[in-house]
Amino acid sequence: MGLDQGPRFEELLRVARVQIATQQLGHALQEKATQVPDKDIEDYYRNNSAAYDEASLERILIPKTRQTPTPATKAKLSEAETKKREQDGEAAMKTKAEALRVRAAAGEPFSKLQDEAYVFAGLKTKPPNPTLGKVRRGNLPPSHIAVMDLKPGAVSALISDPSGFFIYKMGEKGTVPLSQVREEIRGTLQAKRMQDSMQTLQQSATPELNEKYFGASPGSPLVPGGVHPQSPSEQN
Image (cartoon, rainbow, N blue to C red; front, side):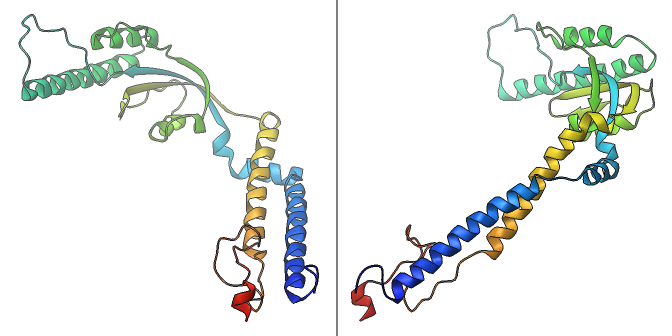
C-alpha cells in the first residue's frame, strides 16, 4: 500500500483540511474585525466620554529627597546616622512642599515655585517646565487623575507618590471632539475585535484526531494538536 493510501493517510488529510479551513476562517475574522461601523465608534466615544476629557494643567514637582552637603569631616557616617539624615531630608521636603502648595493656592507663579523647590532640594539640574499644556485624563498617573475634576483656576491638594510631591493647577477644560479621536477609537475597536475573534477561533477550532491511528503523546511538529502518530510496531 502506498504512502498516500490507507486510513492513516486519510486521517492526516482530514487534519490538513481542518488546518486550511481554520486559517481561512482566521483571515475572514480578521478582515471582519477591521470593519468598524461609524455607529460603534460613536457609541464608544459616548460611553467612554471621561477618557476624552482634556485640560490645560500646570504642575510643580517637589523631590522627596534633599541633597545634603558633604560633611566637613571625612569620618564615615554610621548606618543609623545615614538613615536619620535621609529621614530628616524627606521631612524637610514634605514641609517645603506643603508651604509651596499654600503659596500656589494664593496665586504665586508656578514657574517661580518650581525653581524654588529644586533649589531647596539642592539639585543643580534644570527644573521641569511646570506648563504641561493640554492633557487627557488617561495621560496622568492613576494617583493623579482626580485633578481632572478640579474647577478652572483651582489648585490641587498635595499629591505624594514614590517619585515626589506634586501640585497641580487647573486651566481651561474641555472634551476632545469625536472628529479628532475617530481613528484612534477605530484602532482600539479593531484590536479588541481581532483579539476576541482569534480567541473564539482558538477555542472552537481545536482538531480532534482519531486515536485509532494516532497516539496521544503531545509534541509532534507534524500533526496539529501535538499528537504523535503510532509506529508500525505499536500498531501490531
